[in-house]
Length: 92
Image 1 (cartoon, rainbow, N blue to C red):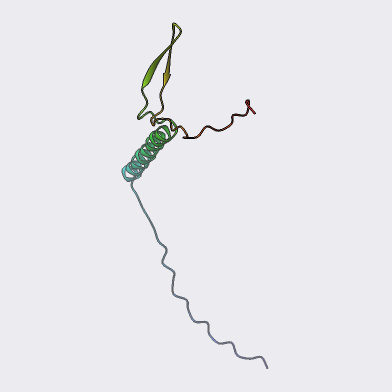
Image 2: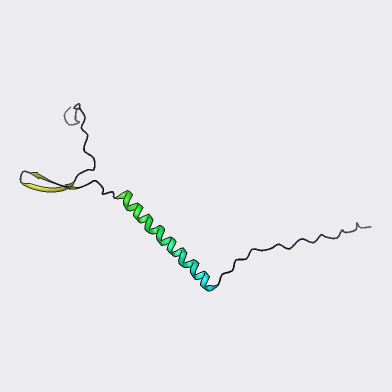
């Protein structure tokens, strides 16, 4: 004789999470997301320009060499020259 089947216990229904927006709410979320992405893009461009092209502390310098005038950008910090003279590669 076959074993008797036990009645199955009923599982509780799983509540699903629902998120509902009207068309105007969806439009508002899209506008806010667009503004955030635009702000992040502009902030990234500004940061990239600041890091890659620093221009603080440089000023144009006019140098005169035998009647020839040239303009170049001077470095922000002065050059540091060593106290001792080292042998140059050409003068061995």
